[in-house]
Length: 217
Image (cartoon, rainbow, N blue to C red; front, side, top):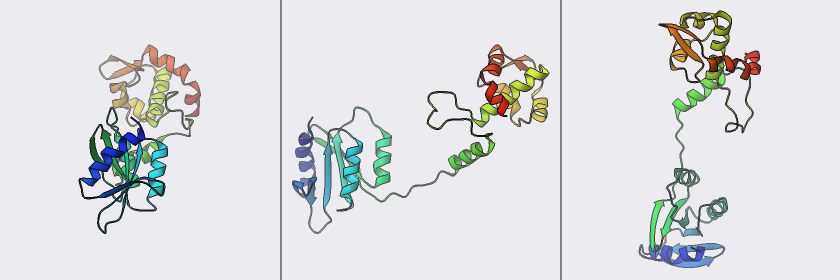
């Protein structure tokens, strides 16, 4: 599908709603006028791209009613809708002769998520130091506050031997020790008897793997 293949279906779609439509008006791929209403501008691209977004943002200096028209994606991508909504851009999807208004232009008022913000601030406050390199999340295990607490637990067990969570909680300063030992997210702990935990082979290996992080705690 070429960009020009999008024009006729979008033109018919708007004409069916009473618009007069013309192409290539002052750098705009499509301009639609209906009575005394502000003009509707549509930018056409075969697929969603940064270039298309930048064109749409530029056209917002002409009118608030700006749509991006793209070929129907193979799968729904909520991030595309989220970005268009945040920028106040409309979105049309074209499949053959069928056009669907996936999103209409509207002012965006972001709603803050208090729970997510609270989790962000809690993680920031409880993480010791700045042990990660920005942009490396997919290349290596992140050193989170949770992982730091788990490291405190394996260090205590290495020094003390099999112990109860209550002792680790008070002596190592890990308030959530009970849940951490029970859940064993990293496979570092084994239960040797009811209410008593020790290091697993994987936990002992972690002592060496995270020696630098342990020294910083």
